[in-house]
Amino acid sequence: MTVSDLPALNATLNSLSTVFILGGWRFIKRERKLAHIACMVSALATSTAFLTSYLIYHWLKQGHVTKFTHPGWPSAIYFPLLTSHLILAVVIVPMIILTVIPALRARYDRHRRIARWTLPLWLYVSITGVLVYFMLYQWFPPVGK
Image 1 (cartoon, helix red, strand yellow):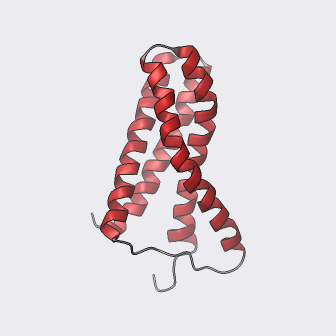
Image 2: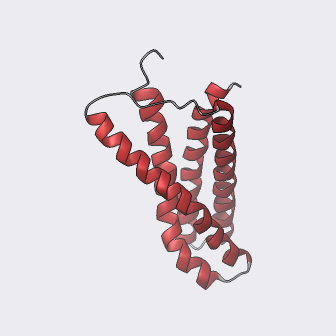
């Protein structure tokens, strides 16, 4: 595996997180608590692996940024999508922590109260992370790639 493989790995980890978050939500709606816990622990693990891989990628790139260069309507979608993704990616980390701690302490009332906000934002960040990857590396790759 090389540094250039990490964006695809990151998109895969984000996709897995999305599947686990949706599974966890579905299971808790059906009161299948153990399955919910398994999915959410898996979502947390894949999101943590993503964040680790993402940070390693950017550390190894040493400031070399892959720029979105496609003109026209794709830029009008890509940049607002990227901006909202980045802002919410920063916000979601403490929210996830604040959601997990009450669950670990069996304070399910508090857990549910913040999970109502955490779940849709975490989903948004996971899904938009994959969309950013596809837009930047697959659908509209930089010229010369």
